Amino acid sequence: MTRIAAATVALVDVEVETVRTDAVQSFAKQETVVVEITTDEGLTGTGYSYTIGTGGHSVVELLRHSLLPLLPGQDSREIESLWKLLHAATRATAVGAITSLALAAVDTALWDLRCLRANEPLWRVAGGASRRVPLYDTEHGWLQLPIDELVAGAVAARDNGWGGTKIKVGKPSAVEDAERLRAVREATGPSFDIMIDANQSFTAAEAIRRAETFRDLDLFWFEEPLPADDVSGHVRLADSTTVPIAVGESMYSIAQFRDYLQRGGASIVQPDVARIGGITPWLKVAHMAEAFNVVVAPHFLMELHVNLVAAVPNGRYVEHIPQLRAITTQEMEIVGGHALASETPGLGIAWNRDAMDNRRVV
Ligand SMILES: [Mg+2]
Image 1 (spheres, rainbow, N blue to C red):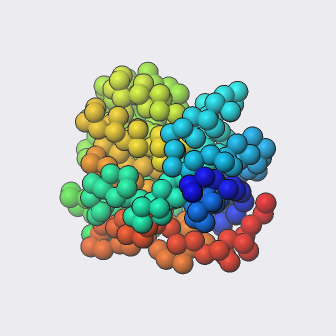
Image 2 (cartoon, rainbow, N blue to C red; image 1 turned 60 degrees about the vertical axis):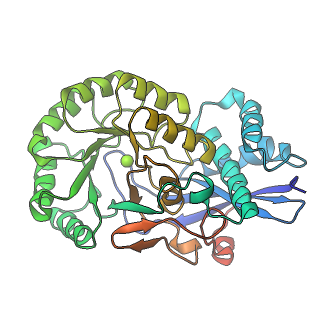
């Protein structure tokens, strides 16, 4: 009665709500890979992953040709076993972004089924640490925004009771970055968290220099200062500055997080549930970080991540970037400057099926 009867995939394009530019890229559109798994008891679990504009068709092809055909007849409750089965089937293309994104779409659908069957929300099934999650703003810190808009966004976030704001860095000159950050610090006062994000755009030497330039701004974290594969560079940077180093959005396996944590290259981890391969590995990263006394502040996907941050005891922040409004009927709940995990059984995302069908490209 818990066997998988059918598994399907669709690709749904969702336009971006705001122009989002950072030091290395612009968010073109969200290619949303949606997997639906139906069981012989009549339950349907919906899972998803995404890209910010390219590669979505490759994820769909991998699912359609290599992964989904393995699912019918399997017991949908045995998520670890199924994850291992699918990973083994893609050994030749793992570790890799496309493979992890494909695994995540299946894994999240299986977790949706698990929660639906238990008639419980994800945040409680996955751990149940604290339903109320601190929130910070990213939507008003993009690199293309002028200083007055950065300041207005940060002040609004503070006045709403949110904990902080993230400002993109990576302007050609360190002085220009510092000017932008100083304006935000002066407007928001000392008791407001300011995160910065370089999107992997610096060398270690340049990141060390910029951290020194920003020294008096009391930054909450310095995100993706360097390319994600330069663990040694992150360790050098972490040793040279008091600003906590945050990494994780460009990592596609648990082992990458282990290396950072073991070597002291990350003070905050930011696993992305789609890029790490789903809820199953996401929780392992979060629990591993807890063992290192490191907090978790996941990347993007706030509609899903709010429920995972609420599930684990070392969840620190959820990042406010709304991106599912066009294909959902209900938004993430925000009360008193905090996000609330959904109490609806399942992943807690209220899909709008008609809107999804209208935007479906595959
Ligand atoms: Mg980032």
